[in-house]
Length: 80
Image 1 (cartoon, rainbow, N blue to C red):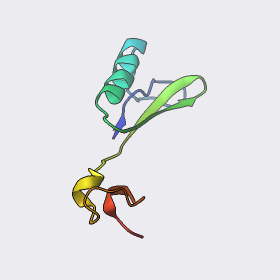
Image 2: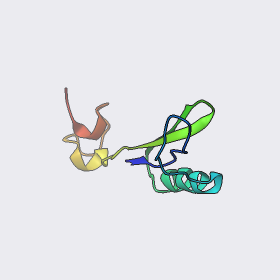
Image 3: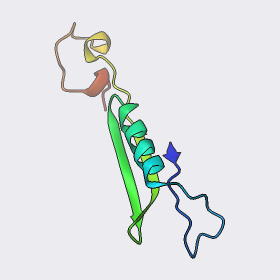
Protein backbone atom coordinates (compact mmCIF):
# COMPACT_ATOMS: atom_id res chain seq x y z
CA UNK A 1 0.00 0.00 0.00
CA UNK A 2 1.35 3.39 -0.92
CA UNK A 3 -0.20 6.33 0.90
CA UNK A 4 -0.30 10.03 0.05
CA UNK A 5 2.01 12.56 1.58
CA UNK A 6 2.89 14.31 -1.65
CA UNK A 7 3.17 18.00 -0.91
CA UNK A 8 2.77 20.41 -3.80
CA UNK A 9 5.99 21.95 -4.98
CA UNK A 10 7.38 23.82 -7.95
CA UNK A 11 7.68 20.63 -10.01
CA UNK A 12 4.51 18.96 -8.68
CA UNK A 13 1.95 21.49 -9.91
CA UNK A 14 -1.42 19.89 -9.22
CA UNK A 15 -0.30 17.31 -6.63
CA UNK A 16 -2.47 17.38 -3.50
CA UNK A 17 -0.99 19.15 -0.49
CA UNK A 18 -1.19 17.51 2.90
CA UNK A 19 -0.41 19.26 6.14
CA UNK A 20 2.32 17.96 8.44
CA UNK A 21 -0.30 16.62 10.83
CA UNK A 22 -1.99 14.68 7.98
CA UNK A 23 1.35 13.13 7.01
CA UNK A 24 2.11 12.30 10.66
CA UNK A 25 -1.33 10.70 10.98
CA UNK A 26 -0.81 8.60 7.84
CA UNK A 27 2.58 7.36 9.04
CA UNK A 28 1.19 6.40 12.46
CA UNK A 29 -1.81 4.74 10.80
CA UNK A 30 0.52 2.68 8.57
CA UNK A 31 2.58 1.56 11.58
CA UNK A 32 -0.37 0.80 13.84
CA UNK A 33 -2.14 -1.30 11.21
CA UNK A 34 0.79 -3.74 10.93
CA UNK A 35 1.35 -6.91 12.93
CA UNK A 36 4.59 -7.67 11.09
CA UNK A 37 6.27 -5.64 8.38
CA UNK A 38 7.80 -2.27 7.72
CA UNK A 39 6.90 1.31 6.89
CA UNK A 40 9.29 3.29 4.70
CA UNK A 41 9.13 7.06 4.40
CA UNK A 42 10.47 8.44 1.10
CA UNK A 43 11.92 11.97 1.24
CA UNK A 44 12.82 14.24 -1.70
CA UNK A 45 14.22 17.73 -1.17
CA UNK A 46 13.55 17.52 2.59
CA UNK A 47 9.87 16.69 1.99
CA UNK A 48 7.99 13.47 2.60
CA UNK A 49 6.69 12.44 -0.80
CA UNK A 50 5.69 8.81 -0.26
CA UNK A 51 4.91 6.27 2.42
CA UNK A 52 5.37 2.58 1.63
CA UNK A 53 3.86 -0.10 3.83
CA UNK A 54 4.99 -3.72 3.52
CA UNK A 55 3.04 -6.31 5.42
CA UNK A 56 4.45 -9.71 6.29
CA UNK A 57 2.05 -12.60 6.77
CA UNK A 58 3.36 -15.17 9.22
CA UNK A 59 1.99 -18.64 9.64
CA UNK A 60 2.16 -20.76 12.75
CA UNK A 61 5.07 -23.12 12.10
CA UNK A 62 3.68 -25.78 14.46
CA UNK A 63 0.47 -26.16 12.43
CA UNK A 64 2.32 -26.69 9.15
CA UNK A 65 5.22 -28.72 10.53
CA UNK A 66 5.31 -32.43 9.68
CA UNK A 67 7.52 -32.98 12.77
CA UNK A 68 4.64 -32.46 15.19
CA UNK A 69 5.56 -29.02 16.42
CA UNK A 70 9.34 -29.38 16.49
CA UNK A 71 11.07 -26.56 14.67
CA UNK A 72 12.63 -27.73 11.43
CA UNK A 73 14.37 -24.42 10.71
CA UNK A 74 12.05 -23.67 7.82
CA UNK A 75 9.62 -20.75 7.89
CA UNK A 76 6.04 -21.95 7.98
CA UNK A 77 7.08 -25.49 7.18
CA UNK A 78 8.03 -24.52 3.62
CA UNK A 79 11.02 -26.26 2.17
CA UNK A 80 13.23 -24.97 -0.53
